[in-house]
Length: 360
Image (cartoon, rainbow, N blue to C red; front, side):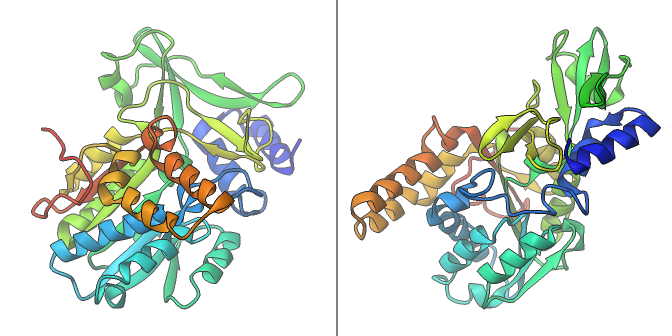
């Protein structure tokens, strides 16, 4: 039993079963034993690898996308360049390097990172040395001004609730104690839920629907700012338009395991439902693109031309790794279709480059 498992077991024994989103929050953000509070989880030596760690091309393409939006929206003399969940700072480093090709853009940028982990803040500070960076605890704390935000694999780590359909009611998943004192999942008694009234038409008996309360809250806060002050937000994550099925998962040392096996020592995520993000953004007054596959977006932004240019300077193993990285980011059988993207932008502004326009 991990130290955090012992703490949670005592809490459950005293207070009763714990809701899944509360369990997930404790596992990831407990101040002493939480996953993100205690380690650098990224890269070959961690538990998973994200797109910015695969190739510099990922961040470069997104940086150029933001640059075109900046030009299209009149080159504001000051703007907020933000990233929630910035990992090691690799994505921000690659984006800002690409932006330097656009005269005046870096001088206008104020860089702000949303990061709760002191460990990761230190790594980001080293990676972004030479840039003026400010850290925040939440998106809501960002200063006023046109907002240019990229959130890569951020929403998938926000705590979720899970509901299983039973007739015309829903049982909520929670975490309790097994006969041996281990943490185990269970279900509440089924109850009708107004929250899921619109899911009765497209679900069947036993189907699982996941709800991420924090995702729409973030999208709403970001979209309200963009609708009023300009800018763009790009969300990139693995998922689908609408939640259906149990996608709650744990990854440790690049291998899947039960999310209840080693709380505090494994990364916990769930697939993102993009529909609630889009609806929250529209309700806040912003325009929203169609959900666009990551591979399609990167190809439209010019990743193949960039890959060919870099390949001319490489040979042997380095060239093979470079070709593999391009495929991993873009191919439909790898990250190209598993990961989806969504852009939020002002209703009176041009569609950001690379994205599909949403249908009414």
